[in-house]
Amino acid sequence: MRRVYTNETEIPQIVHDWLGRPMKVLPGETVGYDDSGPPGDLSRLIVNTEEIDGTEYVGYAKPGTKEDEPGWAIIKVTTTDDGISKLAANGKFKFSFKWTLKETYNYS
Image (cartoon, rainbow, N blue to C red; front, side, top):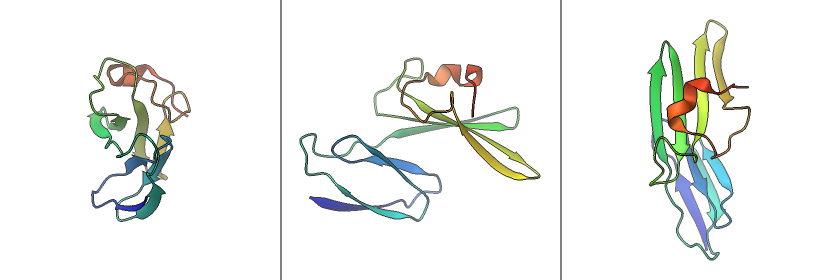
């Protein structure tokens, strides 16, 4: 079945189709996706944010993922006079990191 999702929040959201493919949905953006496959309903990701020494970390994980276990995709957001920089943990937006170790990863 074809569905439509509109992000009515103020932060980016991630939705997944039935194959688990992620789609980043910016605030105010609407996307269409197919959820007719075996897993059925999409899971809503949990989102954590934390500011440490002027740097904001944003983490995304499936519901039930503990902060100290792998399963987080983490973005480091820094703001300078030149603009906003958004970098992924170890250069990859993958759900394989621990939220509790967010400060220890390399971001690119």
